[in-house]
Length: 114
Image (cartoon, rainbow, N blue to C red; front, top):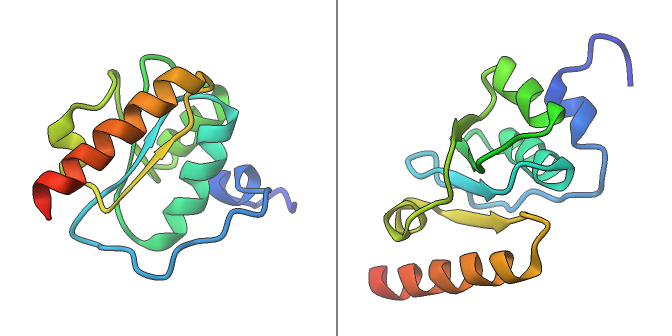
């Protein structure tokens, strides 16, 4: 990666593929603040939709995304209302039980909206 690469270009080095139907009026949520969450958040910044990271702590890569104002950060776990407002929720906490709980809440929030 050239030295002039943005944080998002440097961090999104895996094979994450962007979905083709982002909603610019609704945010994409990334739940978790570690390296995997950073890679997913970086990839989502290409969607031209707001990306919000929910986590009580962040790794350096997420801080880099924040420094470039590519994502915003909520220093907490998301609520059902947060999940209901999102067009996409990606659970990447590193804790399988917490990820499953986030997915279940997102599914319930989606059912309420539908």
